[in-house]
Every structure is written in C-alpha cells, then in structure tokens.
Amino acid sequence: MGDAVNTAVDEAADGWWAQPAERQAAAVRDGKATAAEIVESHLARIARTGPAVNAITRLLAESARRDAAEVDRRRARGGDPGPLAGVCFTVKESIAVGGVPTTHGAVRLRNLVAEHDAPPVARLRAAGAVPIGHSNMPTLTLAGMHPRSELFGETLNPWDPARTPGGSSGGDGVAVACGMAGLGLGNDAGGSVRVPASFCGVAGLKPTQGRFAADHRTGPDDPPPGAQQIVVDGPLARRVADLRLAFEVLAGADVADPRAVPVPVRGEPLDGPVRVAVVADPGGLGVHPEVRRAVGRAEAALADAGYAVERVEDVPRLAETVEAYGSWLMTEFAQSWAEVAPLLGEGGHRYIEMGMARTARAGLGEYMRLVGLRLSIRRSWAYFLDRYPLVLGPVFTEPPVEPGLESRDEMGHQLVTSAMRLCTATSFAGLPAVAVPTGLAGELPTGVQVIGRPYREDTCLDAAAAVEARLGVLTPLDPRPRRNSSGAGAATS
Image (cartoon, rainbow, N blue to C red):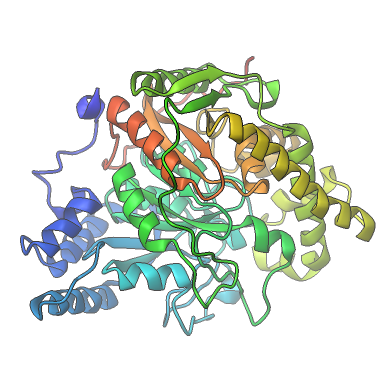
C-alpha cells in the first residue's frame, strides 16, 4: 500500500519541515538546501502549529540558528556536515541541553540550568542535527502517562484532543507528528517512547540497555539501580529510515556513561526466513478489537515481506515480570517519596501512589531476590528469542485513552498499566523494540511493536521498515479540532 494511506499534508508542496529527516540531511549535504533554511522552515511550522498542541515547552530559536550557521560553515569549508545535517530535533524536558534549564516540568526546578549537553544530545549535535526546543512530559515523568506538567500544562494529541498523545515522551511524539521537528529525543522505562509513537502515528525506538550513552541525574548523584538499568533514551521519527539514521548516530560507547558498550549497529545476518512470534494478547488479559486488527495487519505485512510469522500464546513469564517490575521500582520510589511528592504539583502524586498502594514494598532480602529474578527473566527471553528472533505485539492493548485516565481512579490506573504490559515486560528484560504505525482506526492511528534480541535493533528496524512499506506513513499532519468521541471501550478477549 505504501504511502497510499498517507493522510498527511503534501510534503513537496509545503516546505522543508514536511520532508523526511533523511531527505533534509541529504539536501544539506548535497548543497540543495542550507541548514539555516531547514531551521527557518521548522520555526515557521512551530509558530503556526505549536499553540494548538503545546508540545514544545522552550523554543531554542536563536541557538538553533547559530547551530545551523555552523553546519553551513562546516560544509562551505569542505567539511562533512554530518549524517543528520540540519535536521531539527526536540529534547524531552528530562534530558539536558547545555545552557538551558532541564526543568522536568516542575516549578521548583525551573532554574536548573544544564552545564553540558546530555550524551545523546551531544551525539546528535555532532552529527549536524539541531536542537530546536525542549518538549513536554508529565512532571518528573512520575505524574502519569499523559504529558501534563506542573510548569507547562498539557500537550494535546493532534489527531484528537480528547485523547492523550501518550507519554511520558508525549511532547516529542506530538512535535514529530506535526512536523515541528524531524526527530524527537525521549526516554522509555516501560513504554514512554513507544506509547506516544503509537498514539501519535509515528515510529519510536526503545534501544537495548547499554546501547546509547545517557545521563539521567538531576543533581550530583546517579539514580538507584532500577532507574539505572531500565530507563533508556530513544528517538522518535515519522519514518523508520529516519529512526535508523538517529539510531546509528546515537549508538556506541561514551566516556560519559560507563554502561554504554561498543556493539556494531548491524549484527550478523539471520538465517531466513526470519521467524516472528506474534503475540496479539500478551498475558491473555484481553485486547481491544482495533488493536488486534492492527497486529493482524502488521502480521500480514511481515508475511508478505517473507518473514515466517507464527502465532504463539504468550511471551515468557509475563505476569511474573510485570509484578517484579512494579515491586522493584515502587520500592525505590518509596525511599525518597517524601521529598519527591511535593515537587509534583497538585494531583501529580496520584499515579505513583496508586502504584505503591497496589505493590508491597520490598525489604532488603526481597529486593535482592528481585535483582536476581531479573537475570532469570532475561535468560528465559534469551531462550525464547533464540527460537523467534523477533516478536510482534501491541504497544498498548487499548486505543488511545482519555487524558489523565491513569491518575483518575483505581479502575483507570489498572486499565492503563495493564494495557502497556508488553512494554513493561520488555523494558524489564532490557530488550530493544521499535514501534511502527499500522494505519488508522476511524480517525485515530494504530501501531504495533517489533521486539528483538539484545543489541539487534537492526533486525527490529528492518521488520518495522517492512511493515511501513506495506501499510504506509501517517504523518506529518495538522492538529485536528476536538471531536465527539465515544471512548476507548473495554478490552475484549
């Protein structure tokens, strides 16, 4: 089907902002455009579109112009302007851009100015990309899934303002979907890149833990073990080819992060046809019919591309994994909750406190058992992925839900946390995954994720590209006005 299902604005007619990032960078390298022109096109797009969705919290217009001028000077001197020359990207409010505040959306951190770029920002900038703004998220990434922060308010889904754009990297998902940036830089500890990618109709990569260098400190001290091992930074883009470009720039060892390892961006070719385990209903807890149909479309696309797709009952140890994930992280949150909760603003405490109420706090012995259990779960996945190098499943087992449902009451909290269970499990197991759109259900985008072996992001990207080639690209789009909506509906088996 290719781009036949594309409901986005006409790229060729509407300026550089609407072009794929890969094409923007190629134009700068070939002298068909300047980085300055790319930046000005995006700034104009932000001025037209930004107020409708509130995705960008701090516009970096002047520094973006300076960065673009440096890229153009580099090319004029005969130097390599970089694989992402002139490509504009947004940066989540929790990731440092040197010289501007890293607020995490909290009023009390509004003046926390970063001394240096975080490692992924520095890598993108060195590749010629231009940070154009910080992007919105839930306060401290803890106030829920919906990107509503104490400092900047809420971000709206451009497909339907009555639905959340997802989070916590929702500002990046919206900015990329609307053409305000060619790339977004978010992070993911249980779906925070993949969910907004799916809800906004774009692609997103959650890399293997250790694939990208990162720095998630809010002060001099590093976070506790769970946050160290589970949270990873990851890019969002409108097309899988753009996602691959960002991946190849971001991958690799870095002195700034001892966890980052020098693994090649492409592994050995897999014996074909590559086997794909299709898990339409992880855990057997129910999945909305539209989500099931989205998985079916992606399954058919991969079969058409020559993959050996096989439906399986479930992924390894899902219920045990989700329980361990919650117990480990809620125990860590509890240690500093008295200091953190006041930073979240009115109502911002509800989401985590609901999670802590449902999860018994682990003592030292139980915490140590959970650390060991994670290795056991990763081993189970290794055996599973030895048989099936790829897994296809939902990102979220419901269509996009209403904003703030996860913090409203126990029922909403349960629905949302259950719906992202495959994201939770793969984050705990440290696996790479790519979220890719699969078309529309009514007026809302649908998507799936392709999960792979550790450090085999390349195979996930290859499969996601095959899905995209057959099901099309949905964005960029202009924000749509609020419509009457009947609700996400209850999950069905």
